[in-house]
Every structure is written in C-alpha cells, then in structure tokens.
Image 1: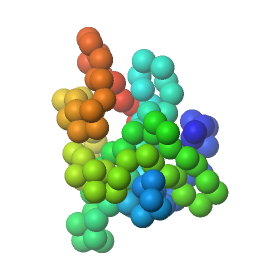
Image 2: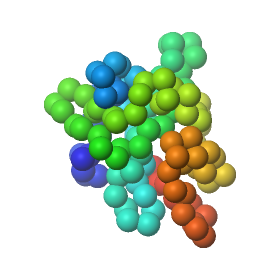
Image 3: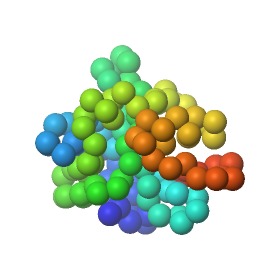
Image 4: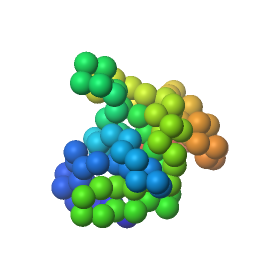
Length: 116
C-alpha cells in the first residue's frame, strides 16, 4: 500500500489496471477520513488538451517501483466521475464515486475523502 509519508515519491507514476493497461498517471492519494488510511487515488487521464482527474479505489492495489496497479478495469476507471486538473473534489461529488464502484459510502459522514 502507499504510505502517507511517501506520496510525493509516487506522484506521476503510471497507474495500470489488473491486465497491465495504462490508465494514466498518479496525481494524488485520498485518505478515508474515518481511518486516515489511503483509500482512493486521483489519476490524470486524457489527451494533453483535455486532461482531467478520475478516481480509483486502492483496495487490492499493488505498488511496484514503476507503477501502481489497481484492481479495476481501465474502462471502468475512465468512466468514473472526474474533476478538472485544477479543480477540487467537492463533498457532494464523493457519493457518486463510491456509487460508481459499488462501494459503501457510510452513514452520517459529511466528508469521506481527504486529499494528501
């Protein structure tokens, strides 16, 4: 798993799916506000003139010296909700990301993800 103190070391590394297909590059790690553990990553995807950040859960992710491999198919990750590369993930957008992956959002949490 990605250790919080080493996140800067992983920025711009390739993110690949379980089959090894490149999805994009690691932009950020989001921690679960309940446990303060790394939970999702922000991935820069798209053409140079149309870049955006999409999100993928870190459950069952594998970190190697040159990439982060997520357990989700490339197409599913690319279809996840996105933000612009200079945008921020708003609290009201979080539930859509959890729903996209079929993950439990939780009850009574006003904010579930925090960017590191």
